[in-house]
Length: 161
Image (cartoon, rainbow, N blue to C red):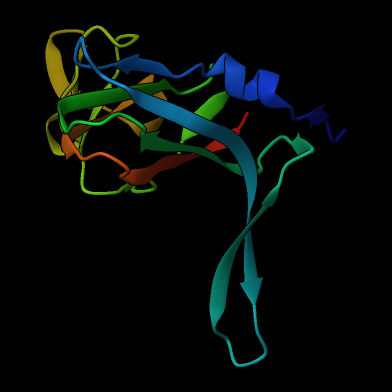
């Protein structure tokens, strides 16, 4: 049986954006959207990825979580950090992060600690192993500097369980 889930901003709300900014920051997260990831295949064998508004989603579909932001302040902000949880009913898609000039780190412990993907490990009994994509709970972008008027976008893909 195919389950179809309605998509709304409450689904994005399930992955509510947590933003850590300098004390004087005027950076505004302007939009947050959830979009279906559609791969179009053409007669010549080439493919193209398209993003379409997601009003509903079925189990197994790939969705993109997209956040756009803009520094509406009058000064440059240093060390801007934005963290987005991966919703509990979703599995992060490997190598799907879009990161406009940001360092990206990941968490497997509910956002308590972060590491680059290649250094993200978990304890498995007495062994330490690389974390799987399904164990990622949060994605964090760190921007060295966001200048006045600068706009940016960050995103990742996830598959609905």
